[in-house]
Image (tube, rainbow, N blue to C red):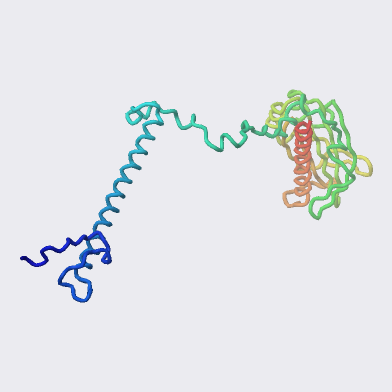
Length: 292
């Protein structure tokens, strides 16, 4: 008889307490080697079952996703649908488009140009006089203070100017000449402002003047006649529909030379002030029109 004949078989899937007892076991002592081998077999089988279960789960999830993609198109040809058949991205509403309000783009109107208002008689309609254009009783420029003297205004432009200037103003359609005189330290300066209907006329008049085109000095209110026979310094310029002129010299009748810097400074101060006053006039009218 072979070893172990007639003994019940060992079942590796049962715990040791349920295994049959072999005849060669003494005193009920278990066969530790056999138990270890059975335990290892159980562990291997458990790992194999876990691996197979994970594989089946992965396959199932993949199949579900594939079915969802196919069903989203309503037929089984979604994967073959060309990209060109899809709606453009701009046609697909976003979450923000559905929630946030939209507004039509707006642009602010361009600012009004002050030059437009002083370049045409149709727009340059604000009140105007020598005392409006040259306000106050004196003019302060830096540390220099000029006392304001007499003022005058006439629509007979040729009567307010001399030498070659009367013909120039008449030819180009002058409508009015305003004058004002300022005095400081024995030096007098008269500013003459000629008005035209358009900026083109004023510019043309300026270009046609020469060294003999002069505004006539304005005397009165304690200011004696000056620059009638003596050599004086003159300037000519234009801005918008305004042409403006200065004549400055000594009230004593002395001739002006190139060394007389104060006479030049006086003429430059008044020429610059006249320009700024005309420009302010355009700015004020542009601002008023924008606020209407």
